[in-house]
Length: 262
Image (cartoon, rainbow, N blue to C red; front, side, top):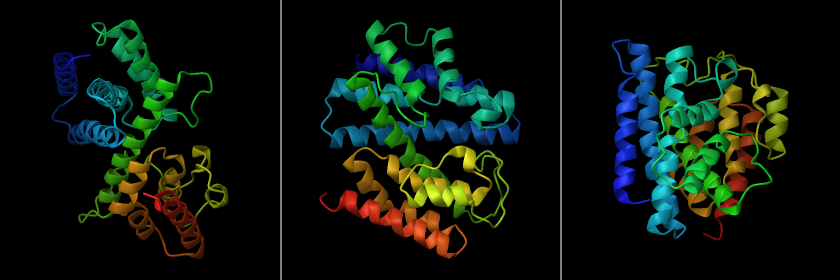
């Protein structure tokens, strides 16, 4: 995959996203949100890849995967006005369908094309498939790390917003009630990823975001989390309580363990 092909794919992405832009302020806001997220994930995946010593060919492949990882989000929001997959479509699988139907990757070798599509289809799964190639799993982990880094940036910026205006698409339309679910607390105290079916409110969702640290794969990602203070910012956006302090302490200890030798 050469630089010319990557440039052409970026042009297709730009034109595709442009087709969803309109005078509807809600639609415009959230289409732009995902467009900007995608471009930052491309930057994040290149930064992590360079730290890990990937060569130019591998970096181009990683960037294309990042470019298209959320391509299903635009049609999802335009149709359903939500980013909640269970209330609409699985955005990863929908993205693969869009790429296939439009022949976006047809100029690539079949093996590379299939790997890109598989990686995109896996990126939002609770767990990765057991029977997959080492390279595909590596790229999926790389994408998941880059994706998380920018989602953390999006949500922490949102929680610290000055205007107080809420965006239901970011909050997954969850109610902003004061409690913390026992199942969410139990998951995180065991250093487990929160089961999304346990989410009852916005506090649960914020705590789930803290728990993403248990699904990070690479040292440069852990280092970025620590340097940017994402866990602390999410903690500060939660009500002060013993449960929150315990969850935060366990997560911070885990982060410290992962970064002590970096």
